[in-house]
Length: 281
Ligand SMILES: [Zn+2]
Ligand SMILES: [Zn+2]
Image (cartoon, rainbow, N blue to C red; front, side, top):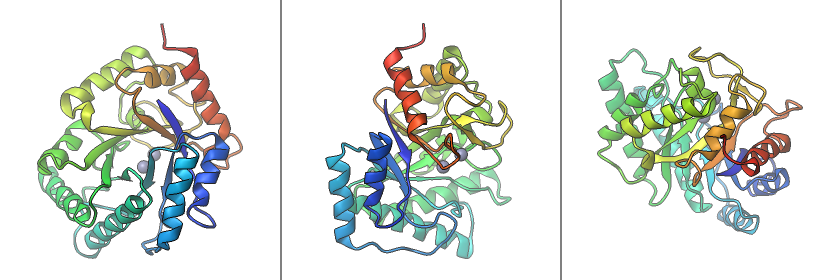
């Protein structure tokens, strides 16, 4: 598995690549604006071309964007339209920068029955993808309480999109753990991925988020912790990153950092040591 981090785009957007390289990243994730604002930031084409060049120069692949936290794909009216517009905007940016795609949360069900919520989400994803040609939307599994907390819900959205060729899934270890998947042991990791394969299909899994969990198994609460410092622990991550079906993928950390300054070199070092140390016995 290749490792990377979520990094800031402070300054010029292409400086994210320098930041990632300094941390020792092999891939990277960015926001394309303030994740808590709807304001669309437009980047000069030459800046996006420079981001593409720097990613290539530093061997960073893939580049992915994470959508704003405000996105609720099962919403209606203004919130729905803003969510679709934001995703389409993020897709165009990432495509121009040569990236893989945009990771998004599905958001809450907003009181809708599941089947209707799923239809709304699928329609939003389809509409957003209409504005780009190559970039993917990666639906992120949630920790609970919002859509995407179960593999069945992810499957339902994919089914409603009739196998759209640019829709994939991103799994976050902290979210899985909070949603009740016990990733502390090799057996637990095997069981989780076997269930995912059966209910969704590993072919749809395009990225993972590597975060330890500050909250308990099945707590439904999304709180990230540094790798090995949370409830999942190092042996869980060893099993996860060495799992044969995940080895070809990339994993992005969104950890608080050992100095609480965000994803850092020390977390990546831990993962690399686990990678070099071999699979669990
Ligand atoms: Zn996320
Ligand atoms: Zn999270």
